[in-house]
Length: 398
Image (cartoon, rainbow, N blue to C red; front, side, top):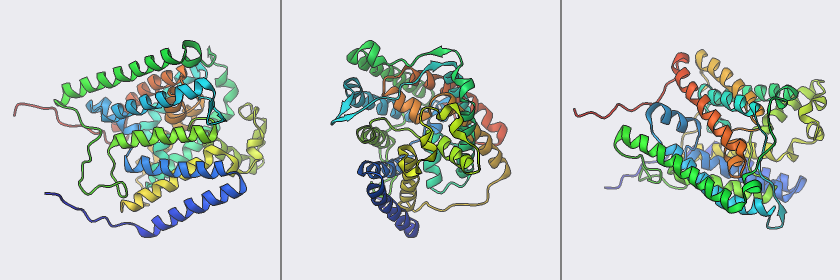
């Protein structure tokens, strides 16, 4: 028998957020460019997709470490597999529909090892990754506002210390596409994704006897309008929207460079000449230029508004302003680690891991390994800070 659950839509925040998305797109189209307006909308759609599919990297990694549940990791491998098929040919060619395109290819260095590890720890203590923090804030999670604030602070510290960490031992940016050729790079990456999916599935089946599905709709009343979505829908939506970002912006999706910019702009407004920092040496005008001209910032704001839309459509937008002191402490520590780690490692779970790997960057694979190790430590630290770790009782004969 099919059951239907009444959805109590939060109409006021839904209308306000939708109006803000539409007005923002119109304003950016008129004052910056039609592409900037389109990227604002892409950000909104990313926020909706992230919220409805609950597509986060933090919990997916945590439940695998603690409970060998692999659905989130397998969905990420689907996302990456579609990503390399879409991205590699155009990055190899250097253009997409007449637009010049480049991938996120960064140095392979000790700063990536340190930064990604710190980011991984911060994910588990802060309660989210970069994209997860944004859609959680937009979805009404007030604790994550604290994480975001200190994410920004940590990013500014990372920008300030750029000279130190950028000189740590390492190698120049390495592109698999450029060095191996298009098809060898594509096939080897697909093999890696299949291997990771297979190994994680093996551990889940050994622990639980069967695999948790990634494409099944759990609730008969769920829909594309109200959610929740199967996690694989989120994986497909994110990679398609990242491809749209590549087509519009000429580069893949990123998140955290905007956090360093926001914090540095605030310092600049108080009299600190951040344009003299080595971090901004290549493009000091970004500090004095209107924020509306920064692609990453506009997409980040769009993500938060999109999450408000999704949470309101699902009837779950209900911010709770009483936050326990211990939760505040972990949000502060986690946010600082996230921000500082993202700068050291040339990106976050989006810019370095997702967009890095589908750009063919070896740095993206190094980031994944080190961030996963840091996240594993973070999982074991969570109980010390009073944070829960999801676990299913082991199967038994009685």
